[in-house]
Image (cartoon, rainbow, N blue to C red; front, top):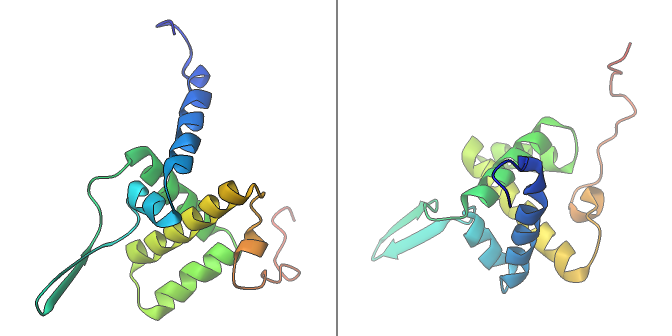
Length: 138
């Protein structure tokens, strides 16, 4: 690739590499660990410590957090899941991390079974009733 090549030409290569990395993982748990969203639990005697991973794929982790932030802001199953985690007692970061874990598991399943992602089908909750949502264009 030449030095003067635009950056948009490199994007498909990066996306293809990311997809190949997903296929190389033996299961969804390994993918979550690779993305850095799976918590690390250390137990020694009577004490238990739960922390986050510092060694991870930064690009995959960033995409997960940005995607989760967008999904939390828009009404739908992901926002309902986030709100349930917050009501359960999780702070913002653990609730988003839980949502990222769920999304990565769904992504892994869709890629392994060659299915198209459907957020309503993937969620445990029914779709929100959007009939009474105020219109933004009026």
